[in-house]
Image (cartoon, rainbow, N blue to C red; front, side, top):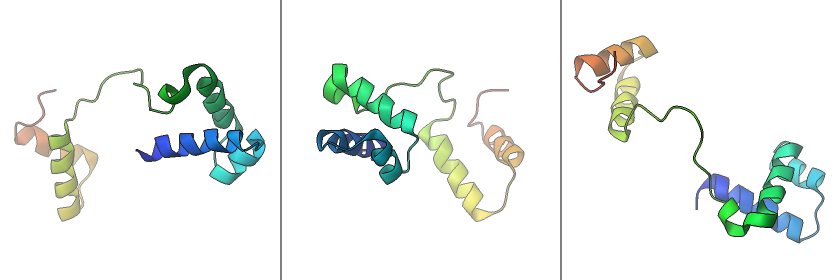
Length: 97
């Protein structure tokens, strides 16, 4: 279980124990609206609401291989984002202009 799912699960458990939303938000360091949203989704969806849903927007352009290479390069020397992108392009790892 991922951290976000565990946190969402704990929110639902707190509600089940009779906690108020404000107390849950304080305990978990979450915004009150986030706590209310979790409960709102839990009621009709049950366990399906705990998993992160796909996000809207442009999908990732970098694969896990790209991200791993970037982590290695960034840990070896201080590079700017522009330098890292140039290195990806030089190594024919990034097909976008």
